[in-house]
Each structure stands twice: as C-alpha cells, then as structure tokens.
Image (cartoon, rainbow, N blue to C red):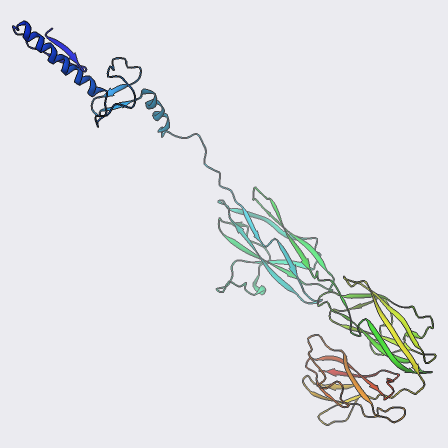
Length: 441
C-alpha cells in the first residue's frame, strides 16, 4: 500500500521500485512505528499507562473522546453533570419578606414603695426586625391606679434615664428597624398591701401582636418580731399587786402591713395572767390591728400572783406573719411578799427642767432622769432603759441603758416612747410601767 492510518493520522509512503528484501525491511519498520504509536496512545503525559483503562483504539466513541489540543480524555456523561451544576441562571426562590419584630426588656418588674411613695422602673422597647414597627396601643390592665406608665426617647450621656417630669404620656407611633423607645413604670401604692398588674403592648409584630409585661408590687411578706422573745419571765412579783410589763410586737417587713388578728392566754389554770385593757400609751387594745412597716405596737401584760409559787402560761399571737401565723410566748412568774418599787421618769434638754412629755429638736442631747424612783424598803435600784417607739429611719440609742440617768440623742423628727424599769434588791420590778414620751421637731 502507498498510505495507511497511524494513530488516526495518514502516513504516506512514496512509490518506489523496491526489491523484495527492501519491502520486508520497510514492512518491519512500519510495524515498529505502528506499535510505538499505539503504546503512546495508551499512556498519560508521564509515560505511565492510562488509569481509565481505555484501549488505544478510540474509534468506538461510546466511552468518550480524545481532545487532541489538551491531551486530556473527557467523559461525555461528566460533561452533562457539570453543565447542570454550573448553571447560573435566575432562581425561582423568593427572598425573605421584611417584617418588624418587637423586643422587650425586662418582661417582669418587681417594685417596692411605702404607702404614699413611688417606685419607678424603666422598660426598653426595641424594633429588632427589618421593617417599621407600628405601635397601636400600650396600656396598664389589672392594676387599678397603683401602676401607671410614661415614655421617653433616649437615655442621657451616662446611660441613665432622664427625669420623669419630662416624660410623654404616649409612645411613638412607629419604630424604625433598630430604633428603641423607653417606657417608665410608676408604682404609687395607697397602702403597703401587695399589688399586681399587666402592661399590654399592641403592635404589628407578626409573631406577637400583643405582648405583656408583668408588674408586681410590694411582694415582701409581713413578719412578726416579738422584741420580748419567745419567753417572758416576770420574775418575783409583789403579792396582792398586779405587775404590768410590755410585750413589744414589731412588724419587721419594710413594705407590708402586719395584721394582728388575736392575742389569747392559754395554759393558765390559776388565771394569774391577763392582757391589760388599761389606757396605757400605744396599747394594743382593739383587735384586729394593722401594724405599719417597721412599726411597733405594745401589748400590756399583767401578772397577779396569788401565792409564792411558780406560775406559767402561754400567750398566743395570731397574725399575718408569712412564716408562722401563730406565735407562742411562754409566760412565767412567782409571788413575793413585798411591795413594788416605784419608777419615775422624765427628760430635760441643756440643763432645763425635767419634763414628761418632752419636746425637743432633732439632734438635741436629751438627759433622761429617774429622779423620784425608789424601792419599797429604801434599798438600791437597778435600772433598765428601753426605746420602744421611734420614727422610721432613726438610729437613736441610749448611751448606757443600765445607768441611773443616761443620755440619748434623738436623730429624726417624730415621736419616741422610752420606758424605765427599776428592779429592787428582791428582784421585784415597778408595778406600773414608767414611760417618757418625747416629740422631736
């Protein structure tokens, strides 16, 4: 033949008159060239066999085709998949819709205020969505007039709320995305009882159209503190006399009234103990009785022994104390055949005359006097001074509560009630309470 195809390329052999040996040599040469070309077509650029396992005969194009320009074999199926994966045409998925979203912090408020006072707290209202938030209405529900609300737009340079006197009555009608406004909640109770309420916030938030803020006021429970503790010992008391002592009942809650429902005596077979209904100052006579926060009411308890024997009984106080609504005080005492000592109490300022009651200015140094106090048999006396009543906030103390004539500085304007108790050598106390009333202006 004068030409043939070698690896897909035509090779032409020029015509010439060859002898039979020459023809044999030419045939062998052509066969060698053909074998070499076939081996090259079955290997990669590095001369190694082609991993795809394709034969050098690519005439059958089912498995793929050979790219002569890049010397890379490509798979027709793979080309189809790549065309699908790299399609960058328009998408049928719509972008997310822009919506407003209300964020409130905090969602619960606990406020404390005395009767006639006001506590204020701030709530942040923010639009954390991507569309304007429309505020339809904000109002207080279930709180009567105890809770109220007002609004302001921004905090001061220190991050603190401005004065409430400049607050607006209504919130802004719209909050743009990322904008905030502030709501101030006012708690102004007319009593120290607990109160609850809700703030309703109506907006176009598609997730929560009506949000709520829970309000709680004066939730601290009342508590009873018996200053005389849970044991009360009259000690020896004069036979034939009634010795009256003070049981002080204090409301230890700073916020909520304590109600005393009842005070009863039990386990007193001889009937020697009694709750006095005499006209003593601040006597807890009529029940039930409300005790204001941190205030003290006085229960006057008398002991009238009928013999020189030991007597016992129990005083039970029923109240609104959250821990123990029934409080028992163990009573004891014995009779003694002797007369009661006498206690006399008064006060003076700056060397002036001793008076009872006494009027003073705040921070005056008050001289307390026990002049006229004496034992029935003329013996020496021991002295015990106690401030039972004092205004809220006072830290007044008696400089030496066991002295005969101590001093005190009354630091807050208001009313003070001070008791003097004297004890004679027999251990007997004065039969009638000796009380000094001081009004500080």
